[in-house]
Length: 290
Figure 1: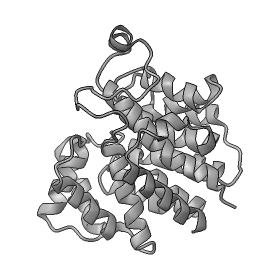
Figure 2 (figure 1 turned 180 degrees about the vertical axis):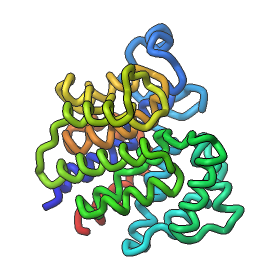
Figure 3 (figure 1 turned 60 degrees about the vertical axis):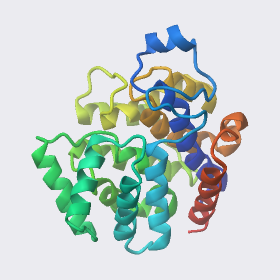
């Protein structure tokens, strides 16, 4: 049976990780220490000029995926794709290069089915020499896990491949899916083994806070085993800088599943936009009953 507290924690974990990390994106850990000390609050600012608690593309795309699934659970890809294009057309503050390229291609070619979107993703993969292993699929991956559970692995994989064709992205999405699907139903997850598996699969020798998909999982796993709670783990992660908002969002999803909504600092949740919080709550409720 799905644990409602963990499902809600997963959804809000993504949003608070995104918002806490957004002002620190593209800064080094040293620059963060020099300018802010250790960031433990929703400070706003950064290169995007976000307000305290403002979400970015990580949560925005997570919501697009979730609402597309709720619209048509049996075949969600068209509904998700339509939302991706609508979001792209809204001119968001931030959008990853791979997502931008594939969504633009999909819009130009009137993509409406999974097959259409996969063709666009493969085309961008080939045109960029395989530069589609970023974390843009992983950052939005939680809702298929929460809604479909362990049986939804293929759906998660397909949604990820709608923009990110690279095998390293696919492997990361699958590991993330398996881990969170187990956690929300009370199963056990060996996070250290998970970190070793992704390091070996991606041949990771040195881990820096980049936009490479497997990196976020390694950071999340390491923080989970080296800290005592959700807050300490997420603070540790975002203060590394680099791709802080997306790594924070991905790690926040895993940490939120592990620790549950009740262990996410209320002061962080309270800074989120009320409409965003309402949507997260409603979607979590639907997933819990699915």
